[in-house]
Structure formats: structure tokens, C-alpha cells
Image (tube, rainbow, N blue to C red; front, side):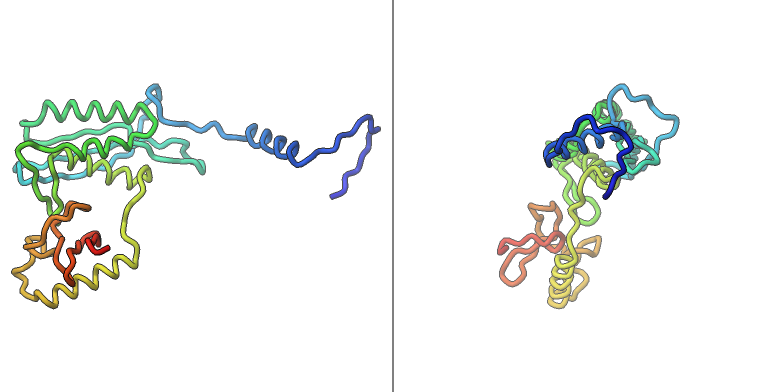
Length: 232
């Protein structure tokens, strides 16, 4: 590229690769957008975008409704993102009112603090009820009501992109579908299925996905839900 010099040359300097890289980096930093991030002093906007999830456990006749409201940061830019701002849990069952209210306030405070709040998911999912857990629809075992609240928050964080989804790829799905058809051909009696009709009633609990879908196939214990197998 040619440049026309209209002024008198009074000095010159040969720019090497390192100097050029520093100059380009300085220009990029000067053009960098001042991105907004979640922190405890951020002002609550007039509009929050919420999602409500229903939890129905066999331990109570009343359902639990979890509402998570999100704040949109850097709206209308390429850096736009949703971050959870607050959570509410409502139910007609007043038995758990005190600890549920405390839990929502603590979780909301952690959300507004900023940073990586994903650790909450594993902390909540690891809570066990000394009276025993329960199986939710689909045969998934929940060690406690708090653990299911953690699973619901995990579902929401995956939805807004804060957590990566661990969905099976097409090859794994095809493998599991083939295994299910093979098992159904051997056990064609519908009475052998559980209440949801997804997995055999006598299936064992999978230690990986916590679902009653572990069956003996080809001399090896195989999970029909996540594909985990003792034979690799």
C-alpha cells in the first residue's frame, strides 16, 4: 500500500513485529466496550424476565413452584447475556415455609453477588433427606426436596447458557434406542414397564444419572437412560 507524504520528514523508525503487535493491542483496548457485569450494587431494572418451574413430589399433595427472574446485561449488543437475579418458591404447603424463605433469600443474594454462581447447583443436589428420598416421574431418584430445587436451578442455568448441557450425541442416542428395542423384543409384556412406561419396572438405579434404568444386557449392566455400562 502506497502513502503520499506531504510534509518534510524530520525522523523515522523501523517498526518491528513486536512493536506492531503492541500498537494493535493498544488500539483494541481503546475500542473495547465497557461491558456490564452482575455485582451486588447493580440497580434492579424495572423489567425482569422470569421462568416458573413446577415440582411435584410424592411427599406432599401440594406442588412447589420455583420462579427464577433473570436480568439482561449488555442489552442489544453482541455481548448480551441473561443472568439470574432472584428466585421465589411458592406452595400451599406451609410445612417448609421457614427454610424455603431462607433458602430463596440466600440463593438470590448469591445470584446478585455476581461471579460464578453455578456452584450452588452441586451444593443443593448433594443434600440428602435423613427420612429418605423419592423417585420423580421418569424414574429419576431425588435424595431430597432441596436436591430437586438444585436440579431445577441447574435446568434454568443450562437454559440461559451459564451451564453446558450434557445431552447425548446422535451416536449415543442411536445406541440407546437400539438397546431399548432389543430389550422390548425380549420383554414384550407391557406389565414389565414402570409407571412412566419408559424403563423396565425391575430396572436398578443407575449410579451415574440416578435413574431406575439399569438392566442386564448381553451379560453387562447397561443404563437405558444415559448409556453408562460396566463393560465400557
